[in-house]
Image 1 (cartoon, rainbow, N blue to C red):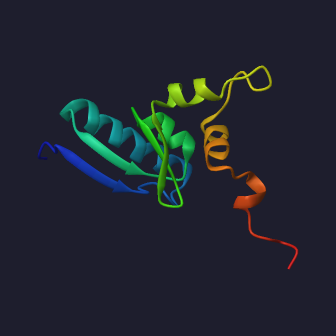
Image 2 (tube, helix red, strand yellow; image 1 turned 90 degrees about the vertical axis):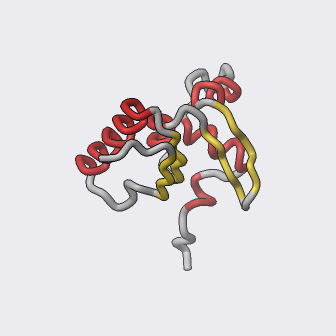
Length: 108
């Protein structure tokens, strides 16, 4: 096994069952910690981004709309109405989209 300096991972856990997903996530964390590797990870799973990433960039329609730590992003969204926002809350707030926008139109 060589010591990678940079890993580019595009949706590495998409379509995996929960155990396999967790195994891949654990492996990514292990590589990062043992080899001090820089990992660029693309994902639509905001919980995965929070678990694996030191910094998260949110891109909407090809534009960066945020770059911060997961804690920093959530802190910016805290309010009396939402004292403990999730990364999904952050995504929806920053992109101006809500869950209904992300679901297919089922009325057709």
